[in-house]
Image (cartoon, rainbow, N blue to C red; front, side):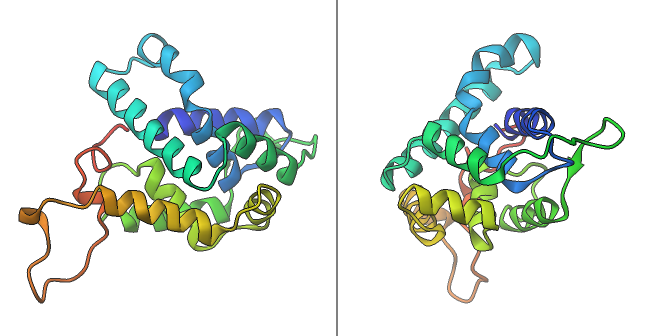
Length: 189
């Protein structure tokens, strides 16, 4: 799913005239993945398994947003308003991540125990740990806070807790549940 979200984020940032891809652009892309899923098999060469995993992850994201009474479309709209548009765009035609966005990806990678790919849910959790001004503003307009969305995400994580055989033994260091979930820890989603 993140491959699709990343493509959408780059297009969103460029189209709105931003010099960098911000965390909020990636979140916009994550909420728009359902639009791109039908094109993913043909245009991006996704396997049936990758499409299935991306669709399931998108469903989980929708459920998390629904718990806070936020529609993905409303989230996109408010994030776009909060980000605004500069009209300038990237200087040399190439667009890359901002320092803040890179920090969120690094935090998400840590949440994944440095698996080959970061999932959308790990990225969202990382973004909520230290939300930027635009994300805070968008959530406020939607009647939510980063804490409320984080609580809904934690509830989704708890409902997908590992089986008893995967739980930590006494004295083992605590890890996040995301990497032990077969859907969220899979490469290419």
